[in-house]
Amino acid sequence: MGRLENKVAIITGSAQGMGAAHAKLFVSQGAKVVLTDLNEEKGQAFAAELGENAIFVKQNVASEEDWATVVAKAEEAFGPVNVLVNNAGITMAKSMFDMTVEEYRRIVDINQVSVFLGMKTVAPSMEKAGGGSIVNISSLNGLVAGAIGYTDTKFAVRGMTKSAAISLASMGIRVNSVHPGVIATPMTVQEDTKAAVEAFAKFIPLKRVAQSEEVSNMVLFLASDDSSYSTGSEFVIDGGISAQ
Image 1: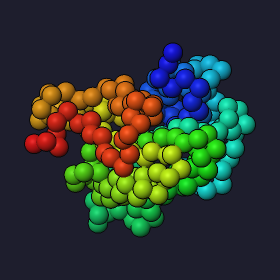
Image 2: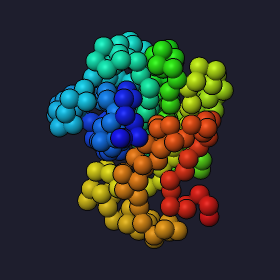
Image 3: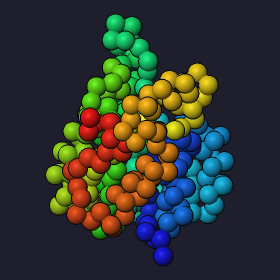
């Protein structure tokens, strides 16, 4: 029997990358998964690949209306939601002086406002289910400095997680954040970034970057009943970087 047997999960930004890895593991562990992303072509194809226990819903995670639609479709297809993984996020390689207010607000909308909307919209469905688990994907840069905009919002996700954990505890809903370091995704292994990532890996205590599946295993733990007494906490997967 899978660790997520009979659980209904929503995973944002799951057409590719880490989100896709989470979704694949969740389905293998018995969950019924709602994949969301703006990339409809990839999302539909991936849902079909995962089979009857997965559906795809196109979503702008910064839209309150889209969040209501996602939850409604999840309940219609599978029933009340047990698990939410707020995975969608973006970054931008620009300095504070080069970034426009519009660009900054886009990062805030996608990385931060989406998490607020997701928790707010999904909580009533989880209450109907008798409780649930929310896993907010922050970053190592939710603990230490990094790119402007990205770092700001990932620190915010960490704080929101703690506030929501207290607010939602009476509803039987746990909320935790995950803080990945450098992960081998299509973005980090492409030719123009591969050399820089390999050079940085030499400074990681474990001397390598993580695979998406290693993050997925932590997300699975937090989504499952195995972590039934964990809430309001941050779980770091960085190969020891933040310990230095």
